[in-house]
Image 1: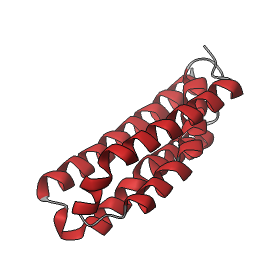
Image 2: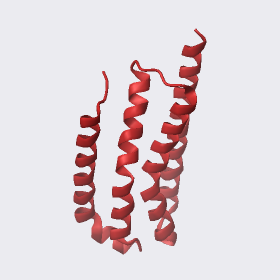
Image 3: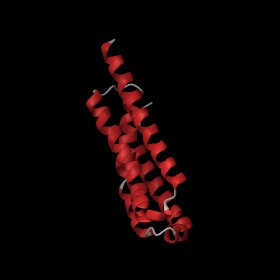
Image 4: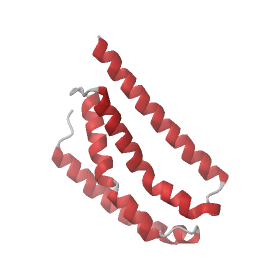
Length: 130
Protein backbone atom coordinates (compact mmCIF):
# COMPACT_ATOMS: atom_id res chain seq x y z
CA UNK A 1 0.00 0.00 0.00
CA UNK A 2 1.33 3.40 -0.96
CA UNK A 3 -0.40 6.71 -0.56
CA UNK A 4 0.11 8.74 -3.74
CA UNK A 5 -0.14 12.48 -4.37
CA UNK A 6 -3.63 12.19 -5.87
CA UNK A 7 -4.77 10.44 -2.69
CA UNK A 8 -3.27 13.27 -0.66
CA UNK A 9 -5.15 15.86 -2.73
CA UNK A 10 -8.37 13.93 -2.31
CA UNK A 11 -7.80 13.76 1.44
CA UNK A 12 -7.11 17.50 1.61
CA UNK A 13 -10.31 18.31 -0.30
CA UNK A 14 -12.34 15.93 1.86
CA UNK A 15 -11.05 17.43 5.12
CA UNK A 16 -11.61 20.99 3.87
CA UNK A 17 -15.25 20.08 3.15
CA UNK A 18 -15.47 18.43 6.57
CA UNK A 19 -14.07 21.61 8.18
CA UNK A 20 -16.72 23.73 6.50
CA UNK A 21 -19.50 21.39 7.66
CA UNK A 22 -18.02 21.47 11.19
CA UNK A 23 -17.98 25.27 11.05
CA UNK A 24 -21.63 25.43 9.99
CA UNK A 25 -22.75 22.94 12.65
CA UNK A 26 -20.71 24.22 15.59
CA UNK A 27 -20.51 27.96 14.92
CA UNK A 28 -23.00 28.79 17.69
CA UNK A 29 -21.34 26.48 20.20
CA UNK A 30 -17.92 27.99 19.55
CA UNK A 31 -19.28 31.52 19.91
CA UNK A 32 -20.97 30.60 23.19
CA UNK A 33 -17.60 29.40 24.51
CA UNK A 34 -15.83 32.64 23.56
CA UNK A 35 -14.10 31.16 20.51
CA UNK A 36 -14.19 33.01 17.20
CA UNK A 37 -15.52 30.40 14.74
CA UNK A 38 -13.84 32.01 11.72
CA UNK A 39 -10.42 31.98 13.39
CA UNK A 40 -10.96 28.35 14.39
CA UNK A 41 -11.98 27.53 10.80
CA UNK A 42 -8.89 29.33 9.51
CA UNK A 43 -6.56 27.31 11.77
CA UNK A 44 -8.48 24.13 10.98
CA UNK A 45 -8.15 24.65 7.22
CA UNK A 46 -4.50 25.77 7.05
CA UNK A 47 -3.38 22.74 9.02
CA UNK A 48 -5.06 20.21 6.72
CA UNK A 49 -2.30 19.99 4.04
CA UNK A 50 0.47 19.47 6.62
CA UNK A 51 -1.64 16.88 8.42
CA UNK A 52 -2.48 14.91 5.25
CA UNK A 53 1.06 15.01 3.83
CA UNK A 54 2.53 14.08 7.21
CA UNK A 55 0.13 11.17 7.65
CA UNK A 56 0.87 9.96 4.13
CA UNK A 57 4.62 10.03 4.78
CA UNK A 58 4.20 8.16 8.05
CA UNK A 59 1.91 5.52 6.54
CA UNK A 60 4.25 5.07 3.57
CA UNK A 61 7.23 4.69 5.90
CA UNK A 62 5.41 2.07 7.96
CA UNK A 63 4.18 0.04 4.98
CA UNK A 64 7.29 -0.47 2.99
CA UNK A 65 9.33 2.58 2.07
CA UNK A 66 11.36 2.92 5.25
CA UNK A 67 12.49 6.43 6.06
CA UNK A 68 15.34 7.38 8.34
CA UNK A 69 14.10 7.96 11.89
CA UNK A 70 14.80 11.74 11.81
CA UNK A 71 12.36 12.03 8.89
CA UNK A 72 9.79 9.91 10.71
CA UNK A 73 10.25 12.15 13.76
CA UNK A 74 9.86 15.30 11.63
CA UNK A 75 6.67 14.08 9.95
CA UNK A 76 5.31 12.78 13.26
CA UNK A 77 5.83 16.18 14.88
CA UNK A 78 4.30 17.84 11.81
CA UNK A 79 1.17 15.70 12.16
CA UNK A 80 1.02 16.40 15.89
CA UNK A 81 1.29 20.17 15.45
CA UNK A 82 -1.22 20.26 12.61
CA UNK A 83 -3.64 18.14 14.61
CA UNK A 84 -3.44 20.27 17.73
CA UNK A 85 -3.16 23.87 16.45
CA UNK A 86 -6.90 24.59 16.06
CA UNK A 87 -7.64 23.03 19.43
CA UNK A 88 -4.85 24.90 21.17
CA UNK A 89 -6.42 28.09 19.80
CA UNK A 90 -9.82 26.95 21.11
CA UNK A 91 -8.35 26.18 24.53
CA UNK A 92 -6.63 29.56 24.76
CA UNK A 93 -9.53 31.57 23.34
CA UNK A 94 -12.12 29.68 25.37
CA UNK A 95 -10.10 30.34 28.51
CA UNK A 96 -12.37 29.97 31.52
CA UNK A 97 -15.03 28.17 29.45
CA UNK A 98 -12.56 25.30 28.85
CA UNK A 99 -13.44 23.14 31.88
CA UNK A 100 -11.37 20.48 33.63
CA UNK A 101 -12.82 17.58 31.64
CA UNK A 102 -11.86 19.29 28.38
CA UNK A 103 -8.29 19.81 29.63
CA UNK A 104 -8.04 16.16 30.67
CA UNK A 105 -9.20 15.00 27.24
CA UNK A 106 -6.85 17.48 25.55
CA UNK A 107 -3.76 16.28 27.47
CA UNK A 108 -4.68 12.60 27.15
CA UNK A 109 -4.87 13.02 23.36
CA UNK A 110 -1.48 14.76 23.30
CA UNK A 111 0.10 12.01 25.39
CA UNK A 112 -1.43 9.26 23.23
CA UNK A 113 -0.15 10.89 20.05
CA UNK A 114 3.33 11.34 21.54
CA UNK A 115 3.39 7.73 22.76
CA UNK A 116 2.39 6.52 19.30
CA UNK A 117 5.09 8.65 17.67
CA UNK A 118 7.74 7.32 20.06
CA UNK A 119 6.56 3.74 19.44
CA UNK A 120 6.76 4.27 15.68
CA UNK A 121 10.30 5.66 15.88
CA UNK A 122 11.44 2.85 18.17
CA UNK A 123 10.00 0.24 15.80
CA UNK A 124 11.86 1.90 12.93
CA UNK A 125 15.12 1.92 14.86
CA UNK A 126 14.74 -1.75 15.77
CA UNK A 127 14.01 -2.61 12.13
CA UNK A 128 17.14 -0.71 11.03
CA UNK A 129 19.34 -2.72 13.42
CA UNK A 130 18.10 -6.06 12.09
